[in-house]
Length: 150
Image (cartoon, rainbow, N blue to C red; front, side, top):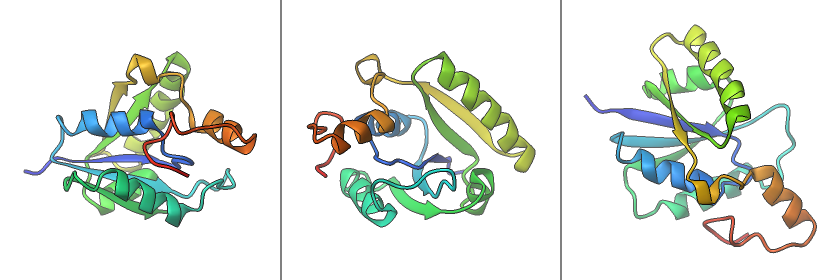
């Protein structure tokens, strides 16, 4: 049976930390679906269609990675694409507290979903999409944080 995992997020933007989690996940799963979700709580900084294309370009040499845009509950989307695993990266204990709650809620939505937590590589743990956005908005160079150019 093929093991498909969903790596969901708003990815606004998709950082080298996210890329690292996907690349490390390739050792665990047969297929990784990067799910770029609409978050009703956020106004996007980078258009979702542009972000999808940038992520696809990032993983062009990895046919076992695909990128999908979705709306609604993550667990419902995982069920729709038959991804029984969710991949989540953890930078710190604050991330764990938040992600643990979400993981439990996802099981309530679809009881076949399992969340797999990967600890962020230490040299990338300080990178967050919000920090990258702030630096970019302020005219700073964000090239060392992203696996593509914006």
